[in-house]
Image (cartoon, rainbow, N blue to C red):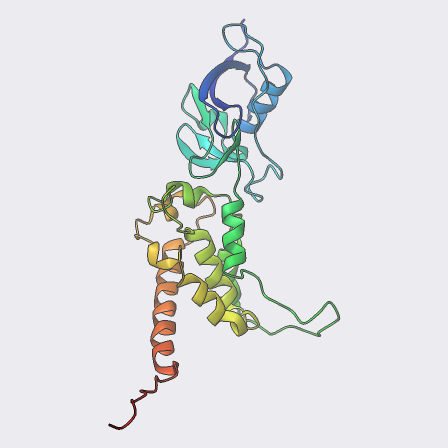
Length: 260
């Protein structure tokens, strides 16, 4: 009996600025295999269905348990993690392509630096005074801890940006993930000390004002993070921040000319 094979098409690109093309392969099926296992088989034997030996497809992966976010790609046209894309649950033949909202590195590997730079922009961390022992940290209620945990699951995978119509080559919109991280950090008792700085960053170019509330990000998030809720909360907080700055801005002193 002939062994079962899987047909998979991979969108290829040799590097930035290079033309894209498709290679189609057949891989021996194994029970329980995921897309990363398919790509590993292609590394061992990168031969197309017409018998041509090619370079193995390039891709990123690390944890293999949907925690690191590195293996984001389009699986049958949908942005998701390759490690949790099980072959048995996919339509066949399978197509694999890189995310389209990030610069291509090669084949399925893209450069997600844009996301990390925006996390720096909004100061998505809780600063400390030093590395010495500061004693026990502030206490959080169970409800606060539970809410913060939901937002802490973000793995900067890029699926929310891939699905967002406001993220494109002519826009500087940072996307939902950094906005949700501002909510996470501003909920922390120590993080609140820098809340105004984060809100000011969200009010700047590429910030929350560029969000069109399409809410595609909620559907795309593999961690089911309530991104639309985070955006709504930050829209309210930035509005309050803006109003507050209006009333605390130094008054302009009118200067009259010399008496005639």
